[in-house]
Every structure is written in C-alpha cells, then in structure tokens.
Image (cartoon, rainbow, N blue to C red; front, side, top):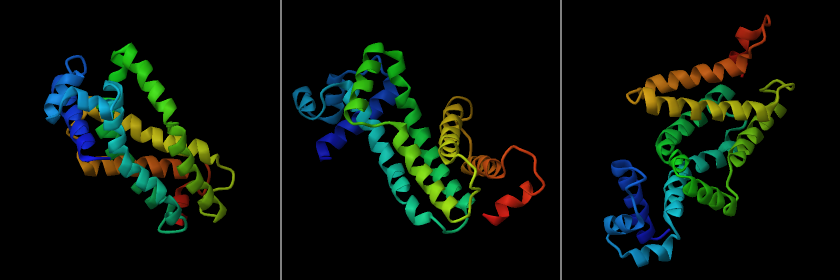
Length: 208
C-alpha cells in the first residue's frame, strides 16, 4: 500500500465517522486526502472499495494473530491462548463494526461490497478455519476433549466477540478493558467447562 492509498483510507474513515455514509462522496474524500478525484480513481474504483479498504486495514493485525496460532499450540494453557486471541478479536471488531454496518443502509453499496468480498475470496470462514486448526492441534495433544466439535467451538468463540463488540458499541461505549477481559475470560471458561453437568466439570479448566 502506497502513501496516497493510506491518505485516502484515513480520509474515508474520518469522513464516515464525522458525516456518515449518505453525505460522504468520493469528491469529498479526495479533497480531504489532498488529491484530485481523478487520482482517487487511479487507486480505488468507487466508495465501496474505499470502505472495504478501511475495514481491511484494521483487520491486518488480527490476521497476524491468527497466523501466530500454530506457535501457541502446547504453550501456556488453552484458556490463556484463547483469551489472548479473543481479546484481540474484540479490539478489532469494535473498530470495524461502525463500517461493516454501513452497506446495509444502501442496497447498491451492499451489492457492490459483496462483489468486492467475492473478488478477494474473503469470508469469515477463513478466520474460523484458522482457529479450528489450532483447536484440533490442541485436541491431538490431549489438551482438549476428543469428542468436541472444534469448528463449532471456533464459531462460538469468534461469534461471541462480534456480538459483544456490536452491543458495546451501541449500549456500553464506556466499557473498560478490564470489563472486556473478564467477559472474555468467562466466555472461554464456560466453553471449556461445557454446559452438560458432570462431576469433573469444575476441574477441567485447571488441567488445560
């Protein structure tokens, strides 16, 4: 990504936060970035591509976390590793929720956004697959039960951060990092223990 693209992404994010989707045009974005509108189209085909770039720019750090998962296998405890991943996922989700929600207010933008995601072959399944692979590796080491559905667990874990981040954006914008950590810890521990009653349930997290 070159400097002009970065300027355009920053300008898009700033204007969307300040003015909202309906009032932001490519002309305004170009002016905010200090370039001509013609130059903007040299880098991005339309507003949908700019919006996508804003989101992808924020997802880069989480992708790095997912790529580091193989190094976590067998290290620390499974609970600690999952809490670390979910904390980062939550941080990213809080940042992107305001932007990934925008296309639903504009049918044309929604259709175009879906086209862009299809072109890039981008989908949540890739992130779920990365976490699933980690859980399966821990399962092979005997640090997770052999009868659990690792993909279902991965979906539940990632979905919990998206749900929490979305609700916090609407209802609890002043939530503290410590409150988030405690919420994530409770989520991980609940999943590790499982919902079905059994005599050894309370001891499970300590052995992971």
